[in-house]
Length: 451
Image 1 (spheres, rainbow, N blue to C red):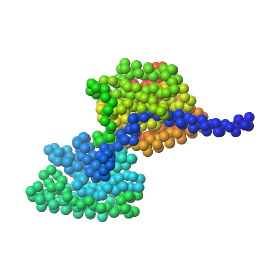
Image 2: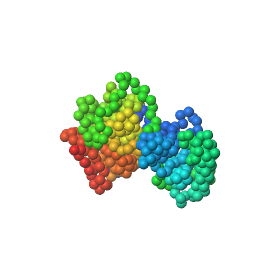
Image 3: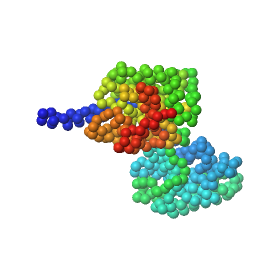
Image 4: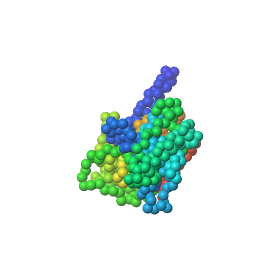
């Protein structure tokens, strides 16, 4: 008896290690796109040339203005002059700028003057962060170190550009440079003295508000590999209205015979007892479902191309310790592959991820605005949280399916924290679908039935 008791902690440790490995082995792969598809094209170093971040910030905001019919840039203001009632009364002058500055945590920022009533009224900090997946345009706080000095530098350069424009009567007179019919702003870059010295500052100056912020989606500047999957016949766009909520979208999808056939093909005892996962990728085009291949590490991989807006796959009973719900990599793949592809090829509400298990079928849906960025560091952090909390769960009572559902919904609530990302469960007996909502550590998961 004493010998058995002494061995128990070691055996439990081995089981935990095996369990965590199994959990990770159920991950989906998105054709090696996790760390790329959420990055901005304008900041990608495809030709190994030095990236001009200031130019990239200008390009993104001009594109944002055009897409959303707002004005933050001279280009958008010029277009809005025909409808003066809709014009902004200030803009960012991208032709006058600081050098590009990289912080110790690898965020990059560039400063630009904010113009109002033909004067420099403030300073805008354009920031690239979260491993090149998120941009912000912030108004620098007047309390920031060196604020007054930087403001005077920008004012001097703006006056210089205005004088240059007035003196060049052949190209226009009055007002700042850079507008159509005016000379270019041939202005020297302003060198900002970063607190702490050097161009690699310890952090950003304080700021808040200003222009828009978000991931690559609202700027239509996400990196996607070319669609080399072939197929012929041209791609089709979804017929469902873009304003359908997730419940309506799933109800419409569940009524299609091809979807029901593929779910039935996977939702079988003999499939759960296989040695490998099975899955299908949902695609725009003439071939709506394509098999997903198993890799050497027992991961499922999307076929080549960017036409895939959804997936369904199994989590097995044949392997001890496999979690009967999504893994962090499943969530990452859903967002970086399915949502991004749907955003480009159809609408984001088309996207879905589905895991089919003996304990229930779970569906991921997204109804947000696309303002998210997920890089390799994000997924690493998610996996670390997930592994740690599952180990705690094992050490404190086991892995009932309600425990699994509670921990996953807590993961979405506390770690992922993305508005519009939701998990649903389809009841195998009734066929009814409910959203699962985390309701606090002392309460069970709250199901909210779809109408």
